[in-house]
Image 1 (cartoon, rainbow, N blue to C red):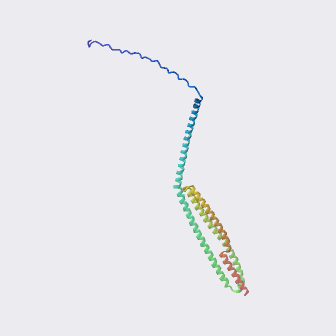
Image 2: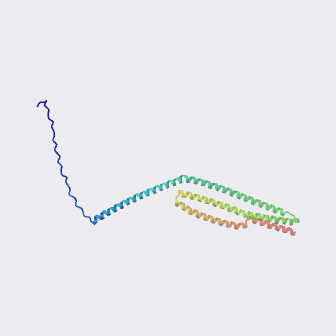
Image 3: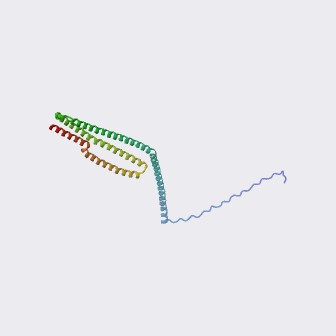
Length: 257
């Protein structure tokens, strides 16, 4: 065969694929339905539902715990803010007001005592001067002096009654002011402990403060009773009674001369 001769193309023969028949598996035999299988079928569903409910309960419990933890953290933040920012500023303002009240009360007490001392000294000086003046009166004008003395005695008795009436009231007002100041101090301390020291310390201090205030009020009532009893025989009244009786004796002796 020469090179110029054409070559015939080779055609590959394709064999048809052999189709294998599908193997059919024999049907499984149906299992008989028994009471144990029914129980396992329904019981398994109940157990599954119970498990799901427990999981939902756990999830809700964890969510509730998270909410409670968040609320507690928020309360801690508020308490921390109050204790670090608001409480110190308010406490300083309360202490400043209490100090000003103490100074005002001390000034009022000093002024009252100075005024009382000056009034008693002035009255005593006037009584002594009046007594010396009356002792120098001559016998022929003793009757006229007696009338004047009785008028002066009545006026002085009225003055003495007014002084005895108002001085205990002023002392009572001063004592009441001290009690109010003490009450304000205790309330400020309780307010401070409530936000800084805790409920236990707050309750302990509150009980102690109640006992202290009850004892203080009882002592104040006893002091007022004692003051009211002793005011009837005060030094001022004794001086006035002695002066009046001596003056009457001098007047009687002048009349008999």
